[in-house]
Length: 331
Length: 263
Image (cartoon, rainbow over all chains, first blue to last red; front, side, top):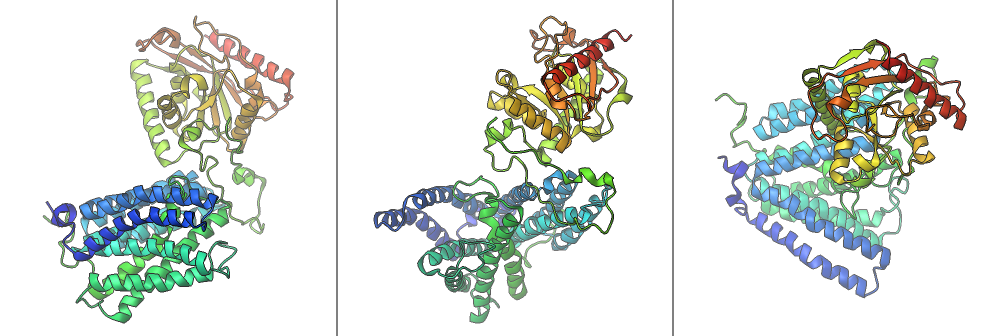
């Protein structure tokens, strides 16, 4: 069988994969100690304490769910991301009410499946075409109800949903078509999640001025700036080892990559806050205790995945040395 | 009921009243699912449960199966199909002697109505255990009615949803399956759903279901089934009070009985 798709014995071929896995396990071990110290020193009081505990316990389940498929093989990662994108769309559709247009939802899900088929197949042409084709299909499907009132809204909600969860997360899965996808994807995941955590901690330490009080009242300029500086450095350093010797391994480019992760991560966060505020709800779901819905956890990934995909792709290509169209190609 | 959420009120109701192109009501209506953020168990039993893509597909498969089964195994004959409503809201009521009844009524409905039809099922039979509740909710698309504590609040919630969504209900106003095959008297809760609303009540009469699958049997026998659909009754002028409700129950019961001796 294909080594890239199912070769779990290659999980730790790349040293960065080993470090990042050790780092993630380390954080999960150390975090309860940090929480305990913060509680003992009186810095964290009761409502926050339960909240932190819940969040930590959720991470204890989430982290393996995210890391293990990546380590096992590209197939499992792609499958995981596909399920994630469908579940995220479901949550989004229930929040915005666009799930009531079943035909549009069906087209969005079929579009996602088409896109992920191209991901599994390593068929870049189809992967790119699935986006515009689905948008056109949504515009057509919305006609069938013969109800011009609200047509633009129906189409727009479907298109936004597809673009965020099909197209956005689809790019994360497409990384799996690169032979050495493990360090790249782990780097992105660690970068994105660290960005969230760092923004939270920096906000607590030196957050004074609110950044966007109407969109997200808890976010401060200090938190955002702190996360920007720290995440960019962390990602740049990891990326240096991931892309050692390639065209991307140049300080300015590495820092740009880090900036993309941090800025787009925070924008993704704000984007979901805007959606929630527009609808008038607090959480998109309650699947993950302490976090809210799936979207509350994966919002920052949505914009980062396509942007970093094309940035990395520009300098070194993604999966160019791998056989394309492994399922649909001419035998 | 545990939740006090209101069913969604669709903004599309008043499109017939001649909205001109220059009107300024172009604001987007973003109405989240009315059962958003309910825990799973509560969501299954919620009267404001809304169906997604997966539930709808499962329900569609089940409905196709039921249709085929009714045609092949019970050779179901339907009389008066043309009296079925063309759109929601509506209420299908029938005599109740068997679990087959709801399948008979569901298989008579055209595909275009099927997605917005909710059988009202006894909470203590269909919604107690998690397994039964999942089946009733996801496959049958049923909404629970708790017989021992069928409060005015739950009935009001159902009434609002009927008109607001709008949707159709399948209801057996006897309140239970007949143990003898003879039809019992209709309960006035039926009236609380439709009094003064103009929602058509379609009286239906099912014959043969008791012989095919009486309450004491486990598996159905291949007896032929008949469904007779009567002329819709409208209670737009009936007052929404105790007398009105009783009147509606009596009228509907008489209409179902009349179908029995129709041929």
